[in-house]
Every structure is written in structure tokens, then in C-alpha cells.
Image (cartoon, rainbow, N blue to C red; front, side, top):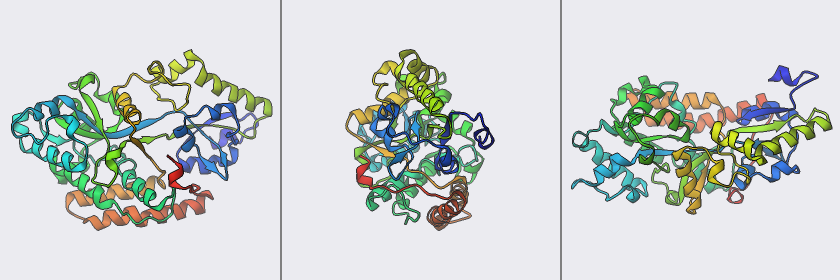
Amino acid sequence: MSSELAKSNAPTMFNISGFDQFAKYQKYCEPLQDTEVYKLLTDDGKDYSYTIDGDSFTLPYAAEWYGIIYNKKIINDYASKNYAVIKSADDIKDYKTLKAVAESINEHKDDLGVDGAFATPGLDASDTYRFAAHMGRIPLYYEYKDMNTTFSKTIKGTYLDNYKDLFDLELETSPTDPSLVSSKTYDDVTSEFALGQVAFYPNGVWAYTQIKGNEVADDDLGMLPYYMGIKGEEETGPAGVYDASWAVNKNASDKDKQATLDFIKWMVTDDEAKKILSQDMGFSVPFTTFDGDEFQPDNPLTKIARSYAADGKTEVRSFTVPDQQWQDDVAAALIEYAQGTGDWSKVKSAYVDGWATEWNNNEESLGSVPQAQKFDQQG
């Protein structure tokens, strides 16, 4: 993209995914906050637009959510047993209950015909994003909330013990010996859930494409927030992530910039174009013009995740993480911990110390870091 943007006939529109890309290509980004199409973004869409000194440079176009996916059929079967600690899946509203259910399912897995409660916390490179990039953002959200900020180059890891509790629960109730989790791929652990072998699978709405057509019917899919035992989490829904965004090349002619904005506006206002984005491409598009089920993806997990907001629950925001190196280091420490060759302090060091190291490196190499705002202004 760097070579394309440097050409005299450079693209007038391009994609941005993640702060590192935004920092790299910021000099090409046109401020968009005064455009018609920016004003059509939902409030969440506006919150995820990369903003510096009041200028918003990107238009998020794909909202996704992640949480703890569960199999209603297994949970309902379990709830009917005399040893069950719940009467229905609706009773799982906090970490204490989730833990009790998972441990009880695992204890009675033979009677229930399952291999474990949680899908294996796979730590093969194809699956570590679930624990670094996604699950790792949950304690970050609450720490930022305490700090009343949306960005800090230093963190304390205040809620990492809560993260540890959930990770331990997954290790202890999965079908795989903890010493072997680093060999389990994304496909392996998705299959465990898709084939009805486990009740719980922490992942995002995108997993539906691998789950459908197997042993779990659409009507049997549910999704919980990432419960870890953090105060206030019972008032939240699944976490939202809005990584993919459009940007407009500020070096294009005024005529071409306007044509690009007109094109984007057409994509998010024309009914045929909206169906292509939402139905054919499967995006939940964070523009106010996508306000009915007709313009939402045919994905039961997306519908479930969106229903939390409709019920008044707060969406957990996915604040940006430094880079892939930080994620890789956290994953490596988790592998050592799971295998018993390293203790939890290494995970905390990779998370907390690595956070400061990588943001400092990024600031030096990319020239900027995210601009902090007050957390309580983000809804």
C-alpha cells in the first residue's frame, strides 16, 4: 500500500486495520468529521474512528463481537439433571455461576456425553489471538475504566488475576491436558465445539462460518460476556471490535475526494449496496442507515451479541493493543504457564512490562500513539 499511495494516480480510498496501520498511513488520511458520511456513523462507530486533536480520520465499516459462545442443547440437558447447579442457561449471569457450571459439567461429562465443559484453550499460533488480542482486552477495559482514560502507555495489570481465573477454568475443564494445549490449532478447538463435544467456546461471531452445518443447530447457539469476576461485568455484553475502517486519501484532488465520499455514502445508504455489505459480505455495519434486521448479517451470533445492547447492557470496548510482538510475548508466557515450565508472573510481566516497552517502541518508530480521551465520554 505504501508504494501505491506514493504514486501520482494513487488510490483515493484505502483500508485501515489497527492503530499501527493508522500511524503508518496517517499522513495520507483526510479528516472526515465534517462529512455527511461520517455523520451517518453510529455513536459506537464514531468512538472507534481514529481521532487526533478533534479530527477523525477513519470510517469503521465492520462491527464484530466476541464472548463465550455456548451450546444451549448441552446446557439445557445439563440443567435437567439432579446434579445441576442451574435451572437454565439464563441463570449464568456472573463468573461464580459460570465456574460452578463448567466444573459440574466436567465432573459429569460421561453422563452428559461430552468431552469437557470448555473448548481447549489452544495456544498454537493460529489460535493465540483469542487469549492475547481478545481475552486480554477484557482486563484492559476495566483498568482503563478505573483510570478514566481510553489510552495509557503504562498499565498495572489490575485485573490480570481475574483473567487467570478464567484461563485456569478453561485449562481445567477442557478435553486436552494443559501440557498439550500449545499443539491445538484454531481448527482443532473450533471442531470441539462445532461437533458438540464441549459446552463453551470463547470466540467471536466470525466463528459461525466454521460452526454452521455441523452438530450445533443455529437455535442452539448462545453467547455470554467474558465473565471473569470483575465488579460490574454483569452489566455488560460481549466485547465489540471495529478493526476494519475506510480512509480517504487527502492528497487526491478535491473532485476525486468528493467522488470517493459520494461512493462511500452510496454504499451505506443504497438498499442494494447495504444488502451486499450486510448479507453477501456478512458485515454488521456501524452506520445508522443499517437499522433493521434486513440489513444485518444472517448470523445468529451477531443477533445475540446485538441483543445485549438492546437490553441495556454496555458493550465492552476493544481498546487498541500495541502490536503483534506484544501479543506473541503474552502467548509465549501463557504457553509456559500452561505447560508448567513458567509461573504466572511471566504472563503478568509480558502483559504489563511488555505493554510499556512496545508502546515506547511504536512511538519511536511510528511517531505517535493513540490520543487518550476520558473513558466516561465513551458511553
